[in-house]
Image (tube, rainbow, N blue to C red; front, side, top):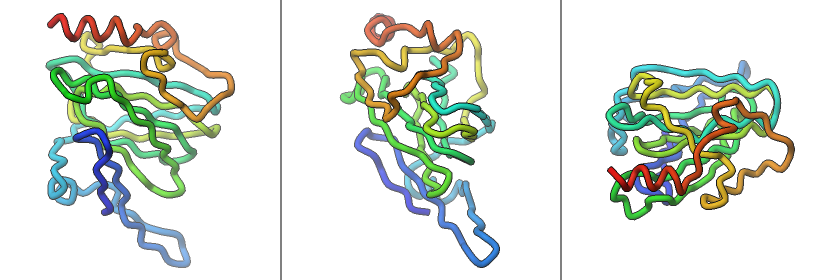
Length: 185
């Protein structure tokens, strides 16, 4: 596996090796030992699969609050996404800092998202499937949502067309309001 740390501490891009021949390829998409060797020790307990019919579908920015924080290992099974993470770890020198990467089923790169990061993506192609592992089950009471297009975050999503949002994502809180609630605790 090719495991590369990103500019925000704890986040990684990961590309499993593909063994190709005349039939196609085979890839070991997850290897606990290889990730642990790179310092990624999340113990994944659940896989989630999303399918988005149209390009421009937005999912996020989401996170699970303490004590239900989730680390995620995100990969695109078909299609392509612009994926963004925001560091909201209490006391982190990178608090509020974000980065965006593109994940494409054709090249096989994955994104490791540490706990206490907002996470979201927009589909760049129709019929996109995204698979992500999480290290904690989902909790409705712990779920938080911040607007994907919050001007304080100023994430450049690489998508300029119309967007498709769930009712929950269309009413996400501002990052300023989220910051106040985090810093108040």
